Length: 147
Ligand code: ADP
Ligand code: MG
Image 1 (spheres, rainbow, N blue to C red):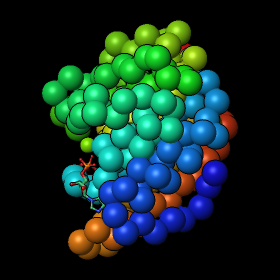
Image 2 (cartoon, rainbow, N blue to C red):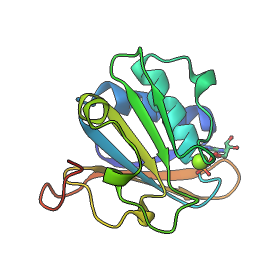
Image 3 (cartoon, rainbow, N blue to C red):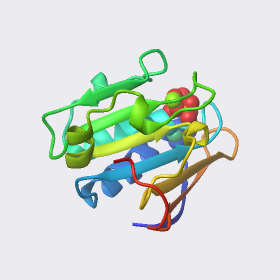
């Protein structure tokens, strides 16, 4: 599921994310870029919804770096790199087996020191008030993998 989508509310963004979640296979990595308040965490909440989690659990992991949710169709690993200058997914304590079997969603992927092979890039632009433009695209399969 790729393309450009305009949403007009947080609910619509969550719905879009939950539809994307239904298409994801184990090992999917989503790189979520956009300014503070763009809706990256809201998008992750929608992913969680689509994977069958209770989304009240999903909060911004800004202070914890990594949150793992288990018990849905696939495990969801939510990573927020905001507080790091540079980060390497191999070195922040992701369980590689859970990452390979689940979905990894990364906020602030600009902090990564290297790309992730085959990741899905999601860019959220704030169009003012509740308007958001969300671009979902596949990145090239060449490059580096997390493992
Ligand atoms: P980020 O994680 O990118 O910093 P959050 O998801 O925490 O952003 O916050 C997004 C904020 O924008 C929330 O308060 C949400 O209610 C609001 N919002 C308004 N319109 C939208 C929309 N169309 N999509 C997503 N969030 C929206
Ligand atoms: Mg956030």
